Amino acid sequence: QVQLVESGGGLVQAGGSLRLSCAASIRTFSRYTMGWFRQAPWKDREFVAGITWSDGVAYYADSVKGRFTVSRDNAKNTVYLQMSSLKPEDTAVYYCAAGNTLVVVTTPLGYDYWGQGTQVTVSS
Image 1: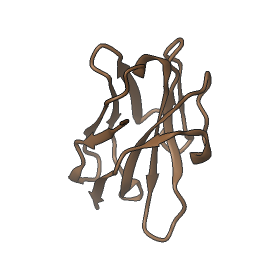
Image 2: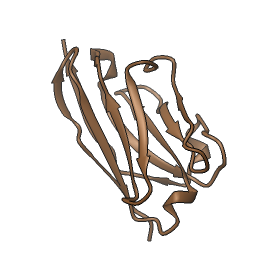
Image 3: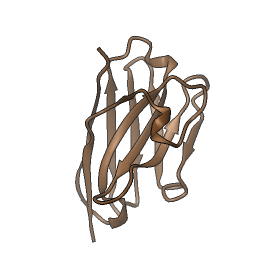
């Protein structure tokens, strides 16, 4: 049974940093493209960042480019999202997702497995 478990969320002041982790119980984790999405109240789930399995290429939403960094450690079956210069508009529940694709997909439909989410709240 596949499980994705996020951690690292919390309350932070604007300008601060957080690092989210997502531990995956996928036997072939290294063959999955991993994505981070977020969902704020009354908004659709939106793509934040993703990283391919084949060559570790990262892709970011324009809203987080230059502030967030996605990385993965295949030996630990874990993907990370380092978030810096956080803004109040970054407040959302953050989800990690795993997709059996060669490229980063920016829509939720491109992913097969999802975590339960972790809350990130940025105060002004």
